[in-house]
Length: 101
Image 1 (cartoon, rainbow, N blue to C red):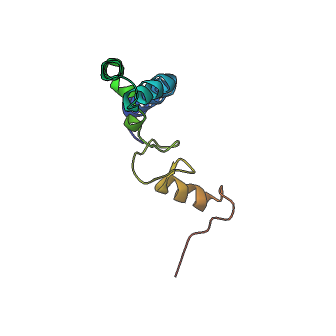
Image 2: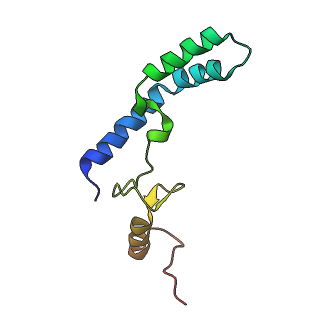
Image 3: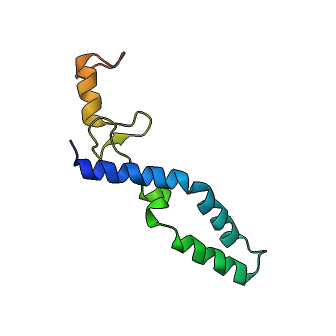
C-alpha cells in the first residue's frame, strides 16, 4: 500500500483540476490566440499563473485504485500490474490466466 497522504494528495489534485479545468482552458485559449492584443494575452497569462499549480491536469498521477501504487498502472483498468495479477490468480477477472511457456 502507498502512503495514505500521497493518495489523498492525489485525490485533492484530481478534484481541483476537475473544478478549474474550464477556467484554465479558457485562459489558455486567450493566451494562445494571436489575434488578441498582446496586453490582453499578458493579463490572461497572469491570471493563469495565479491559479493553483495543482489545478493543472499534468500534476495528477495515475495511481492504482486498489493499492495506490504510482508505477506500473494500466490506464484502462486503473489497476497496477501487481493488483491485476493477484485478482487474476484469485479468479476475479474472467478470461485472465497466468502465462506459462
